[in-house]
Amino acid sequence: MAIPAEAVLGTTVAVSFILLGNAITQSFMGVPALLVDFPPPSSPDHAARARLLGRQWPTFWVMGNQFFRPISTFGIFGYAYTSWVASSQGPNGRLGDWRFYAAASLCHLITVVHSAMNLQPINEKIDALSDPKGRVDTKQAESYARKWIKFNTVRLITPIVAGSLALFQLIKAH
Figure 1 (cartoon, rainbow, N blue to C red):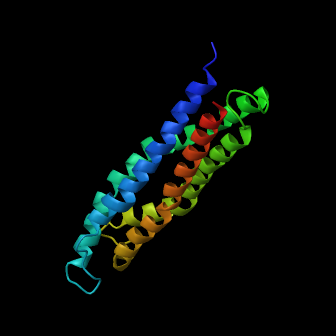
Figure 2 (tube, helix red, strand yellow):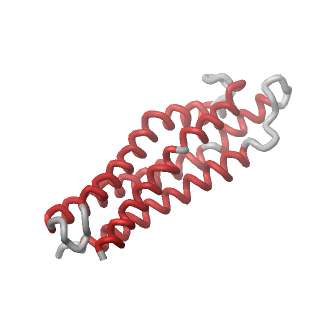
Figure 3 (cartoon, rainbow, N blue to C red):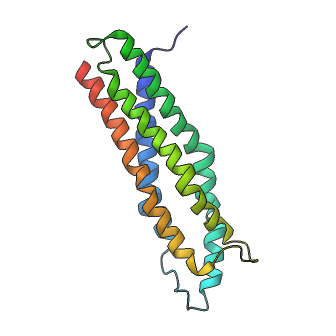
C-alpha cells in the first residue's frame, strides 16, 4: 500500500516548521542564555565559565544530531518524493508544480550540508572547551558560541522557505 503523497507532504511541511522553531529557540533563547554575563577573557572567571559552556554544549549538540538531523534528512526525501509525484501528475495535478517541492527539498539539503560543513566544526570546538587539557583556546569560547548563532541563521531561513514554498503550492493547487 502506497503512502499518499499528501500525507508525506503534510508531514514534511510540519517537519520544516519544527526545524524553524528549533532554530529560533536555539539562536534566540538557548545559546544566548548560556552567554549571559559571560566574563571577558581577561577575567579570572573566564576559564571556568568556558569549561562550563563546554559541559553544557552536549545538550544542544546531541539533540541536533539525534533528532534534528534525521528530520532534516526526512525533509529532503519527503519533498523530493512529493516533487516526483507532482511531476508525474502533470501541471494540472492535485499537488501543483513539482518545482516548488524540488526547491523545498534543496532547502533541506542545504541545511544538512551546511550543518555538517560549517556548524559541526564549531560544535566540536565548543564541546572541547570542557576538556581541562586545553585542546582549544578558551579565550575564544564566547566567540565560538556567537559564531554558531550566526551560522545557525541558515537553519532559520531554509526551513521557512521550504515549508512556505510547499504550503503555498499545495494551497494554490487546491
